[in-house]
Image (spheres, helix red, strand yellow):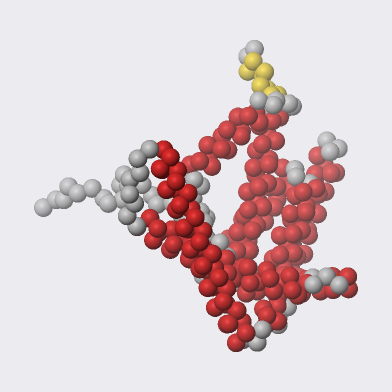
Length: 283
């Protein structure tokens, strides 16, 4: 007896993958075990490099470095969020408008001359943005939130000579990073509960606008209430564990693997700068 049923997944729309922030990917790897300060230092260095040398060679080498790190960290494809349709529309509109600017280089197709300068500039800026977003995502996927505050306190230790409150800033950032995922979950629950409530069908545009304004005010009031309650609970928990000084205290320090990582980043960055300034500019 043969079955004529079609597979359940055929023709069905694939669910979009949401953006997951500040949640490390489960597992362990050489990238996961790096000191958080090393990852922040690498991200800062690459960002500065791409600011002063935003060429194709630099972008390509940094992208290869990020892809190699993602391969070592065993980042699954499912961790990459889906690109919404509206973003593709925005990119297409930006590409078309940038292409209208023209500029060198140009190609000739019969009697028509196409100038590709604007389109190439747009593609380069888009690629640079993707590399920077991938760098931030790598830190989020491979670093525990609790390690970032102490790492910033250690990196900013030389600034204490200038009487800059580095520890206080590190504590504030650590609290914000810990509260951010928790508040996102709370807001999602509030929004889902709000959508489940029965809604009267208003008549007229003025009534619909008033209903939407009322919903926004109710959601904001509920969000502020939840935030204050969570802040009170977090304050009690911090006091019970010894105060805010524990948030910026962590015995973790850079190891040999961190030195190797920084050395590889410096070598690749130096090669990119050398190619951009010595090879391409003299060609």
